[in-house]
Length: 317
Image 1 (cartoon, rainbow, N blue to C red):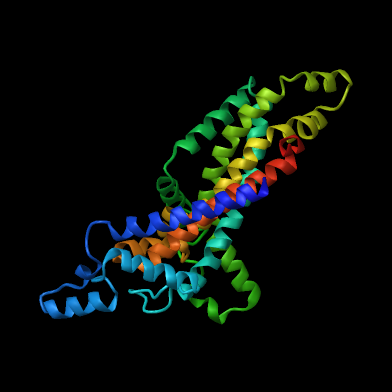
Image 2 (image 1 turned 30 degrees about the vertical axis):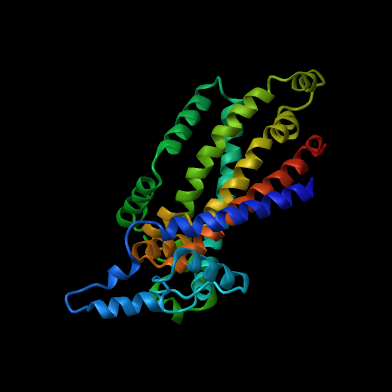
């Protein structure tokens, strides 16, 4: 079973590698056209294309890219004028911070939210929370981010609206810098985490309502077990299975860069790097970010399968 998963993993990586390259290279437009201007000569543009290997046949470019990648060389950023590895090394820690805290909010708040809605589905409070989760789930992420910035940054002035840290923070001590970083994290984490928590609660709600109708729950009630023990010890554990799969898929999405949130909050992570590279047609950076994002999605699926078996040992057969 494990060998089959590894084989499928490698096959998918190969497919993504080939598809990623040709989709980017066959996209409309030429990267050298961005440098065109009234004083630009045809010779200088041709020289630029030669330097970047764009004049070579497509298959030859693919072979060159693949050979470099197998050697661990991700290429050189055309816009930032430094190795792609260095660009990603600077952006990845910022995205990891955002992804970790957003996933934590997603899991904790989403599970609590879903359990309450599922248990009190026929109560007015459950209906209100259910409607609230549907509203938040339906909101576009960029719109939710704008509302948070308008309310908490511009009106109340409680939190900074953008960037990862304050400009003056280099002169502050460790604890002041840590507090400043947490302040900058709150809004983007809240937007990402709240949107994910609403989706998680929707999945968990349905599972809780189904599990609470099972015979073993009625048996537990007949035995006189407490309501809290029935909900969290028996019902929640079994209702958690689809949520584990959902979170396994959600983490790669965050890690590959919550594109819109990072751009709106000027967060210097993978999403913002990809956004700037797309507009500049910086092929080496786009290629690397896409491949890393796709790889993390596959790894997330693999991790979700493993977690699924941990939560429910019956699926190991």
